[in-house]
Image 1 (cartoon, rainbow, N blue to C red):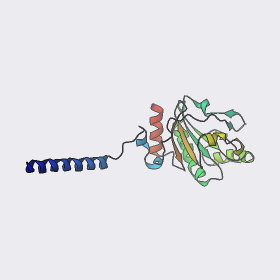
Image 2: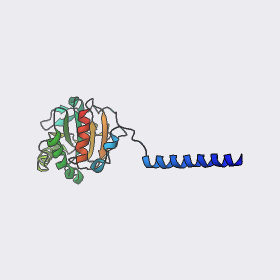
Image 3: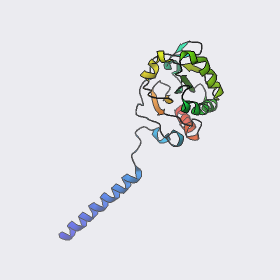
Image 4: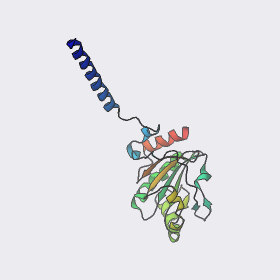
Length: 194
């Protein structure tokens, strides 16, 4: 009887060890099916607010025409909050221009929303062109009109938020990234094909 108890104890211990090793090797499964695409240049993507509806506050075209994120429903959009006084913002802008060139369609678009002051609006539009992103339409939300920034939960610049075609957040990335990287383009391709 004692012998059977030892064998049973040994088997339970062996099963526990195998389970622990398999759990450690497999890691935690991603909760969002798209999290597996958050690698390389876009590994800092945060999916914790996935499914949150886009803010309804206005932002503005260069001529002052108000628009909202809801105006882009039907498209996957990448919204980048940036400023000319933000070095990381300027560093990533060429890659946003390259992504727009590579993937802009009736199903995807990059929106760069400047948070510069009203008196710097012309300079910000010029700077967007100088940074290799002239293919991105200029948008602005001045500090007096920051509702969109606050309602979107932006806490620093640059912040990039991806929205699906229904206007719901997919993921966000605080800080700069290379949006023309193979990982970023692969993620955009996956989002657009759905």
